[in-house]
Amino acid sequence: RNEPLGPGAVVLRAFALDDGARLVEAIHALAAVSPFRHLITPGGHTMSVAMTNCGSVGWVSDRRGYRYDAIDPETGQPWPPMPALFMRLAAEAAAEAGFPGFVPDACLVNRYDTGSRLTMHQDRNEKRDSEPIVSVSLGVPAVFQFGGQGKGVTPLKIPLVHGDVVVWGGPSRMNYHGVMPLKASHHPLTGMLRLNLTFRTAR
Ligand code: MD3
Ligand code: FE
Picture 1: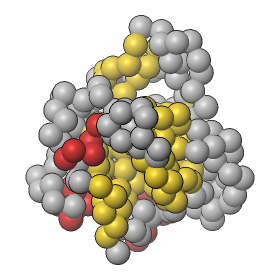
Picture 2 (picture 1 turned 45 degrees about the horizontal axis):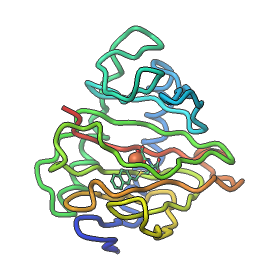
Picture 3 (picture 1 turned 60 degrees about the vertical axis):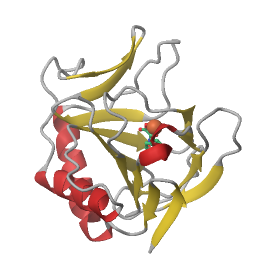
Picture 4 (picture 1 turned 180 degrees about the vertical axis):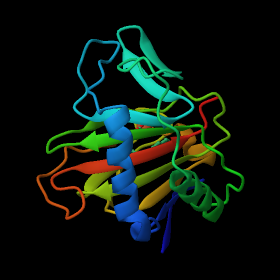
């Protein structure tokens, strides 16, 4: 069931399947406190993916740049706390992939509507790149692109479906990656949406 993608990167197929309904419910609850919003990039573009966060810090973007902040700029309040279920799932997945003792302080929640995409990028706003990122896919399937350390490498295309968990650590942590435009599809737990959790040690 474990598919290695590269050094330190592994797909754990269906790892979160049993928790799927509870995870989706918890996302709705936290989005009632810190709503999904389309962030503006420093270049002035509106992201097609809608985002919110939970945990002691959250990832935000605006004309000033990308950063982690303890305060949700939309509400002026701290982000909602990370549910115990989220912490437990992230730590179990990281341990399974060879990263014991993973304690994330940030969970970015991405919401994809039909056509939403994430262009190739690196995640480089976290303080310690020795810590992995754990991602959980929920709802409508997506095609994930996994590139290399530089922009030139032709990315691998990996389908990610509801319940799949991926752990990105070690040398793969800084690889370029993205998500292809979401195809119109339906999932009983999310309707037309794809939801993705990424657990990070930001500070
Ligand atoms: C590979 N999210 O939020 S998760 C992101 O499906 C992001 O919403 C995508 O990329 C999504 O930044 C992909 C998988 C992922 C996350 C972090 C990585 C893959 C990664 C960091 C390094 C290499
Ligand atoms: Fe990313």
